[in-house]
Length: 146
Image (tube, rainbow, N blue to C red; front, side):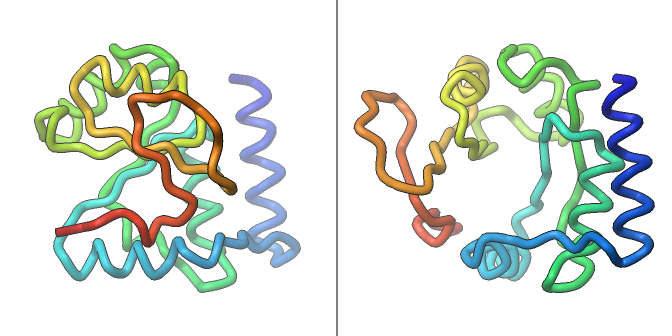
């Protein structure tokens, strides 16, 4: 927790001073816009603090994207590899776990989310030779929002 707080202070100084600008993968912003247009609320669950998430998405190469997110979660909701965390997040979001699609590049996180009934998607930079119950994508454009 102490290191996360220190990270937040360093990031705040860097982002506020213009020395840091968050860069997104090219497929991220088009999918965020598509979800927003479809009325799909987007949330972030990160091991980075909520404050750090807001600094990151508030200072991107594409501008301030904070308005695209309905909420943020960090490890104060629980560990990312613990299923209880995902149940807590679903309740905080006001959705049944089965209505939520959780995307991650960490299989153990996906396993925990799937345990509570969430839909899960494994995001990789290149297709992996992995036997997994999680559908695999290399681009957010592969996720259908309909």
